[in-house]
Amino acid sequence: MQGDALTLYRETIALYRETIALYRKTIALYREAIALYRETIALYRETIALQGIAKFNLLRINEMLY
Image (cartoon, rainbow, N blue to C red):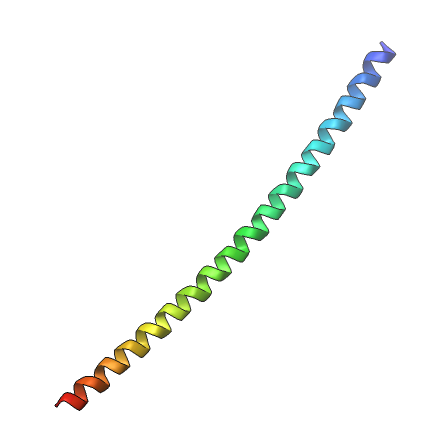
C-alpha cells in the first residue's frame, strides 16, 4: 500500500509540474496576443491618419481646380 501511495504522490507532482508548464505557456501566449493587439491598434491609428491626410489633400486639389 505504501508503494502505491508513493507512486500516486509522484504522479501527482508530475501532473502539477505539467500544469504549471501549461500555465506558463498560456501566459506567454496572452502576452503575444496583447502585443499583436497593440500593433493592430497602432496600425489602425496610422490608417485613420493617412485617410485624413488623403481627404485633406483631395479637398486642396479640388479647391485649386476651381
